Amino acid sequence: MADKKIMAAVVRDYLITCPVLNGAAKVGVNFLGDRPTEYTVDTTPVSPVVKMYADGASLRQYVFIFASKEYYSPDVLENLDLIGFYEQLADWFDAQTKANTLPDLGEGKSAVSLETLTSGYLFDAAEDNARYQIQARLKYYQEF
Image 1: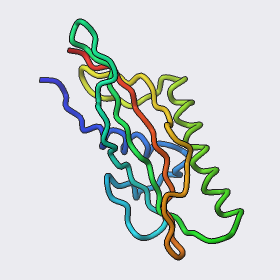
Image 2: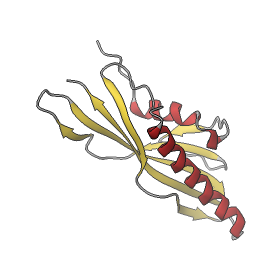
Image 3: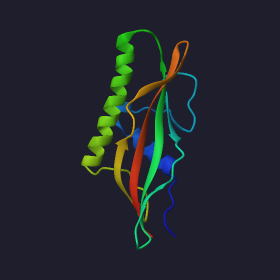
């Protein structure tokens, strides 16, 4: 039987290794706490199959949102730092794809690319806390 890995867990574990996160321990899955600074990997509902091949194999995708809870204020420099964080994260995704240092998806699956679908943006703000996020996609090949 193939080694079955949960995609959200694979992406979470992989993102924890990202130097932009500076070893952050608080990376949840489908949950973001109320206190800065925390992170989450949220699953996005999309069709997993991008392309089917004649032999039964397929090109697939796992689309997710990586979000953070951050302190929020009218301070321009703080807000630019947050947007810069997400730009660095997107650059890291690109570098990992180019270097082919993508997550291990288990038997029968191989990662093809990790790419951003949106730039980092302010999603929601309330008083002194805000949610910033970026949407991304892990594309992978799955054997039949």
